Length: 181
Ligand SMILES: C[S@@+](CC[C@H](N)C(=O)[O-])C[C@H]1O[C@@H](n2cnc3c(N)ncnc32)[C@H](O)[C@@H]1O
Image (cartoon, rainbow, N blue to C red):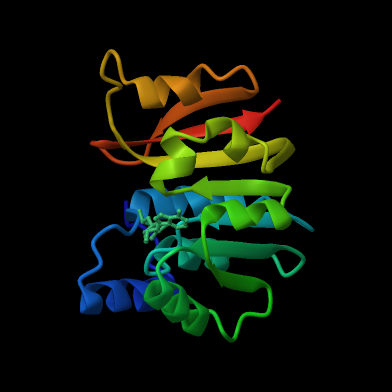
Protein backbone atom coordinates (compact mmCIF):
# COMPACT_ATOMS: atom_id res chain seq x y z
CA UNK A 1 0.00 0.00 0.00
CA UNK A 2 1.29 3.46 -0.87
CA UNK A 3 1.28 5.90 2.02
CA UNK A 4 -0.06 9.41 1.42
CA UNK A 5 2.64 11.94 0.56
CA UNK A 6 4.04 14.16 3.27
CA UNK A 7 2.10 17.44 3.47
CA UNK A 8 4.12 20.36 1.99
CA UNK A 9 4.31 22.16 5.35
CA UNK A 10 5.74 19.02 6.97
CA UNK A 11 8.36 18.77 4.22
CA UNK A 12 9.27 22.41 4.81
CA UNK A 13 9.64 21.88 8.56
CA UNK A 14 11.67 18.70 8.02
CA UNK A 15 13.99 20.54 5.64
CA UNK A 16 14.50 23.31 8.20
CA UNK A 17 15.27 20.70 10.87
CA UNK A 18 17.74 18.91 8.62
CA UNK A 19 19.38 22.20 7.64
CA UNK A 20 20.01 23.14 11.26
CA UNK A 21 20.93 19.68 12.53
CA UNK A 22 17.83 19.40 14.76
CA UNK A 23 17.28 15.68 15.31
CA UNK A 24 14.43 15.53 17.83
CA UNK A 25 11.46 15.97 15.48
CA UNK A 26 8.58 13.51 15.77
CA UNK A 27 8.43 10.58 13.37
CA UNK A 28 6.07 10.42 10.41
CA UNK A 29 4.13 7.72 12.26
CA UNK A 30 3.43 10.07 15.14
CA UNK A 31 2.71 12.86 12.68
CA UNK A 32 0.05 10.81 10.93
CA UNK A 33 -1.52 9.93 14.28
CA UNK A 34 -1.59 13.63 15.18
CA UNK A 35 -3.18 14.42 11.82
CA UNK A 36 -5.97 11.92 12.37
CA UNK A 37 -6.74 13.19 15.87
CA UNK A 38 -6.51 16.82 14.72
CA UNK A 39 -9.05 16.23 11.95
CA UNK A 40 -11.60 15.28 14.62
CA UNK A 41 -11.31 18.58 16.52
CA UNK A 42 -13.88 21.21 15.52
CA UNK A 43 -14.20 24.62 17.22
CA UNK A 44 -11.41 23.46 19.49
CA UNK A 45 -7.95 24.27 20.71
CA UNK A 46 -4.94 22.02 20.14
CA UNK A 47 -1.71 22.45 22.06
CA UNK A 48 1.86 21.24 21.67
CA UNK A 49 4.50 21.35 24.42
CA UNK A 50 7.91 21.61 22.75
CA UNK A 51 7.74 22.94 19.17
CA UNK A 52 11.25 21.94 18.18
CA UNK A 53 11.72 22.66 14.50
CA UNK A 54 7.99 22.70 13.86
CA UNK A 55 7.54 19.21 12.38
CA UNK A 56 4.84 18.05 14.81
CA UNK A 57 3.09 21.43 14.52
CA UNK A 58 3.22 21.14 10.74
CA UNK A 59 1.48 17.75 10.86
CA UNK A 60 -1.22 19.23 13.10
CA UNK A 61 -1.53 22.43 11.04
CA UNK A 62 -1.92 20.34 7.88
CA UNK A 63 -5.12 18.77 9.23
CA UNK A 64 -6.39 21.72 11.28
CA UNK A 65 -10.03 22.62 10.75
CA UNK A 66 -10.54 26.37 10.09
CA UNK A 67 -12.73 26.55 13.21
CA UNK A 68 -9.93 25.25 15.44
CA UNK A 69 -6.58 26.65 16.51
CA UNK A 70 -3.12 25.33 17.35
CA UNK A 71 -0.89 26.84 20.01
CA UNK A 72 2.66 25.50 20.34
CA UNK A 73 5.35 26.55 22.79
CA UNK A 74 9.14 26.26 22.65
CA UNK A 75 11.76 27.28 25.21
CA UNK A 76 14.58 27.83 22.74
CA UNK A 77 14.39 31.32 21.26
CA UNK A 78 15.86 30.41 17.87
CA UNK A 79 13.56 27.43 17.37
CA UNK A 80 10.51 29.42 18.48
CA UNK A 81 11.36 32.20 16.02
CA UNK A 82 11.77 29.71 13.20
CA UNK A 83 8.40 28.13 13.95
CA UNK A 84 6.74 31.54 14.09
CA UNK A 85 8.11 32.17 10.60
CA UNK A 86 6.99 28.79 9.30
CA UNK A 87 3.39 29.37 10.40
CA UNK A 88 3.22 33.14 9.81
CA UNK A 89 0.63 32.76 7.03
CA UNK A 90 -1.70 30.60 9.13
CA UNK A 91 -4.02 32.76 11.22
CA UNK A 92 -5.08 29.89 13.47
CA UNK A 93 -1.56 28.72 14.40
CA UNK A 94 0.40 30.48 17.17
CA UNK A 95 4.02 29.64 17.96
CA UNK A 96 4.99 30.94 21.39
CA UNK A 97 8.44 31.28 22.92
CA UNK A 98 8.62 30.29 26.58
CA UNK A 99 8.37 27.54 29.14
CA UNK A 100 5.56 25.02 28.58
CA UNK A 101 3.90 26.20 31.82
CA UNK A 102 2.70 29.39 30.03
CA UNK A 103 0.17 27.13 28.31
CA UNK A 104 -1.99 27.32 31.42
CA UNK A 105 -3.10 30.68 30.01
CA UNK A 106 -4.23 29.02 26.72
CA UNK A 107 -5.90 25.99 28.33
CA UNK A 108 -8.08 24.00 28.24
CA UNK A 109 -6.98 21.99 25.22
CA UNK A 110 -9.07 19.47 23.29
CA UNK A 111 -5.95 17.73 21.99
CA UNK A 112 -2.46 18.05 23.48
CA UNK A 113 0.83 16.74 22.10
CA UNK A 114 3.16 16.57 25.10
CA UNK A 115 6.65 16.42 23.64
CA UNK A 116 9.08 17.81 26.17
CA UNK A 117 10.68 16.24 29.21
CA UNK A 118 9.35 18.10 32.24
CA UNK A 119 5.58 17.85 31.62
CA UNK A 120 6.04 14.25 30.49
CA UNK A 121 8.15 12.98 33.40
CA UNK A 122 7.90 15.34 36.38
CA UNK A 123 4.70 17.37 36.02
CA UNK A 124 2.12 14.84 34.90
CA UNK A 125 -0.77 16.19 36.98
CA UNK A 126 -0.10 19.77 35.86
CA UNK A 127 -0.05 18.56 32.27
CA UNK A 128 -3.34 16.69 32.62
CA UNK A 129 -4.90 19.81 34.15
CA UNK A 130 -4.36 21.52 30.76
CA UNK A 131 -6.91 19.15 29.19
CA UNK A 132 -10.65 19.68 29.08
CA UNK A 133 -12.75 16.66 30.14
CA UNK A 134 -12.92 14.31 27.15
CA UNK A 135 -9.75 15.77 25.62
CA UNK A 136 -6.99 13.61 24.16
CA UNK A 137 -3.29 13.63 25.01
CA UNK A 138 -0.51 12.11 22.88
CA UNK A 139 2.98 11.22 24.11
CA UNK A 140 5.64 9.83 21.80
CA UNK A 141 9.15 8.34 21.84
CA UNK A 142 8.22 5.02 23.42
CA UNK A 143 9.64 1.72 22.21
CA UNK A 144 7.19 -0.65 20.57
CA UNK A 145 7.03 -3.10 23.44
CA UNK A 146 6.56 -1.70 26.96
CA UNK A 147 9.49 -2.94 29.03
CA UNK A 148 8.57 -4.13 32.51
CA UNK A 149 9.22 -1.35 34.99
CA UNK A 150 8.94 1.59 32.56
CA UNK A 151 7.89 3.93 35.34
CA UNK A 152 7.34 6.95 33.10
CA UNK A 153 5.06 5.08 30.73
CA UNK A 154 3.21 3.40 33.60
CA UNK A 155 2.58 6.77 35.25
CA UNK A 156 0.56 7.72 32.16
CA UNK A 157 -1.00 4.34 31.45
CA UNK A 158 -2.22 3.90 35.02
CA UNK A 159 -3.18 7.49 35.79
CA UNK A 160 -6.63 7.59 37.46
CA UNK A 161 -7.73 10.70 35.54
CA UNK A 162 -7.09 9.15 32.13
CA UNK A 163 -8.30 6.29 29.97
CA UNK A 164 -5.17 5.26 28.06
CA UNK A 165 -3.70 2.86 25.57
CA UNK A 166 -0.51 2.38 23.60
CA UNK A 167 -0.67 2.70 19.82
CA UNK A 168 2.05 1.29 17.58
CA UNK A 169 2.91 3.86 14.92
CA UNK A 170 5.68 1.75 13.35
CA UNK A 171 7.34 -1.60 13.98
CA UNK A 172 9.51 -0.05 16.69
CA UNK A 173 7.71 3.05 18.03
CA UNK A 174 4.65 3.44 20.21
CA UNK A 175 2.63 6.42 21.38
CA UNK A 176 0.68 6.64 24.58
CA UNK A 177 -2.78 8.07 23.88
CA UNK A 178 -5.09 9.07 26.70
CA UNK A 179 -8.45 10.73 27.15
CA UNK A 180 -9.16 12.78 30.25
CA UNK A 181 -12.08 11.38 32.26
C1 LIG B 1 11.34 16.41 21.19
S1 LIG B 1 11.59 18.10 20.83
C2 LIG B 1 10.06 18.61 20.13
C3 LIG B 1 9.79 18.08 18.75
C4 LIG B 1 8.50 18.55 18.13
N1 LIG B 1 7.38 18.45 19.04
C5 LIG B 1 8.18 17.77 16.89
O1 LIG B 1 7.29 16.93 16.94
O2 LIG B 1 8.83 17.97 15.87
C6 LIG B 1 11.44 18.84 22.44
C7 LIG B 1 11.55 20.34 22.41
O3 LIG B 1 11.16 20.82 23.70
C8 LIG B 1 11.89 22.00 23.95
N2 LIG B 1 11.85 22.28 25.39
C9 LIG B 1 12.70 21.83 26.35
N3 LIG B 1 12.31 22.27 27.57
C10 LIG B 1 11.19 23.01 27.36
C11 LIG B 1 10.33 23.74 28.23
N4 LIG B 1 10.55 23.78 29.56
N5 LIG B 1 9.27 24.39 27.70
C12 LIG B 1 9.06 24.36 26.34
N6 LIG B 1 9.84 23.69 25.48
C13 LIG B 1 10.90 23.03 25.98
C14 LIG B 1 13.28 21.68 23.42
O4 LIG B 1 14.02 22.85 23.15
C15 LIG B 1 12.96 20.88 22.17
O5 LIG B 1 12.95 21.69 21.04
